Amino acid sequence: MYKISKEFSFSAAHSLFGLPDDHPCSRMHGHNYVVTAHLRSKELNKQGFVRDYNELRIVKDYIDSTLDHRNLNDILTPLNSSAENLAKMIYDVIKPLLPELYAIEVSETPKTSAIYEPDSQ
Image (cartoon, rainbow, N blue to C red):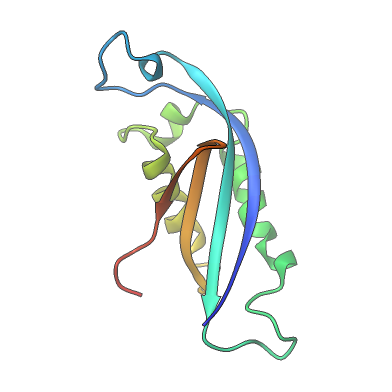
């Protein structure tokens, strides 16, 4: 199995509901997010790639047009704007465009990340 990944970044704001009032994430705040698209294939194409990295521009275009410098609460409603929900949303949008995609990872800080990877692939 061959695997590749590519990182993308964006900045956005959000607040999480269902937390105690004194929880810092219950207040509006922002992150410099890093999104990593993970692709895999049993075989390489004729150029020797899982997928040409330039073709992953569709991930960047989606992030730039939909998520960058936005309030994620407006985008993910009615779901909480957690990194987990964000990872699944991005996966669901991108998977039909990149069949080799098997996971999306979303990091809000350098020390934390959430990964969405469906059970059956």
